[in-house]
Image (cartoon, rainbow, N blue to C red):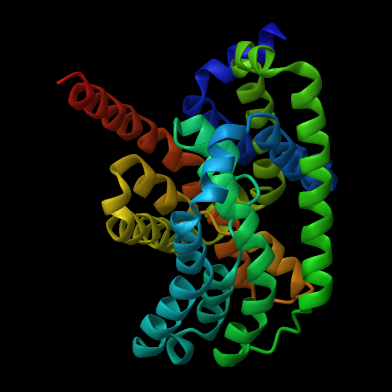
Amino acid sequence: MFVLAWVGRQKTQALVVVVLVALALPPLGAILRPYVTEAVIGMLCIAFVRIDVGEFRSFTRHPGLVLAACIWTTVVVPISVFIVFWLLELSVVSPALFHILILQAVAAPMMSAPALAALMGLDGTLVLVVLLLGTAVAPFFAPLLVHLAGLDIGISPFSHSVWLALAVVGSAAVGLVIRKLAGRQTIARYSDELDGLNIVMLFIYACALLRDVGLGFFSEPFMMIGLTALAFAVYFSYIAVGFLVFAPAGAKTALAIGMLTAERNLALMVVSTGGIMPPIAWHYFAVNTFPILLTPRLVRPIARFIDAREKQKAAR
């Protein structure tokens, strides 16, 4: 427990180490790859363990913000991204990149998003509620939007929905039972340990996805650097636009929704296609892990700054 607590206290610094270790030890990725699903579901269980029940009820009684965020992430963003890349004629310039970027745009929020929000000091309950609603809606919108984009990837709304529903319902059941048995005070006392568990599970996820990326930087450095730059550019664009759109709801809320907009479950979309993609799309899929795990190191100080300003305003 001491080790988990220590890891949890490092928070976003630990994520940087996670990325470096995952790149340096490709064989570890092969060993841990079979456990990625369990790791993702484990993070979702922890999100339910830590859920603020009072805040959750508040969102359900006043669902305007949650509905707006869900429509934004599942409908507005994918359509906007398609229009932008269509105007740029990316489907002609690089069909493979167009393919993977559209898959990224139509994907539901990542199941690890609440865990990452907690590590950054953002509102994990808001992120979880929007995640749940977006996860329920996305499987029905994603196939339509993918079809409109002209991609034939055979996503099955039924199988997609069933898998997600089982993962979410199972995680909710486990997490809420643990919360009930442990009690709110115990969960608060072991906050660092829960952060440490989240980081361990993110480590499993990162090792599996980054298994061959280090070798890719040696064999095709310019392409990999370009794809990494693109992944960061897309990620920060999602955050920036989401933040600006939801700024009237408050800076910290807008930042949480911006992060949720950027953290899209591209892995699940790739699985839904049967994994049949061009090599450049696979490389982008892998390097997209970098902004997901490294950006929290930059965002956490911003969240702290927003907290300090809000406390100053409240004190006046």
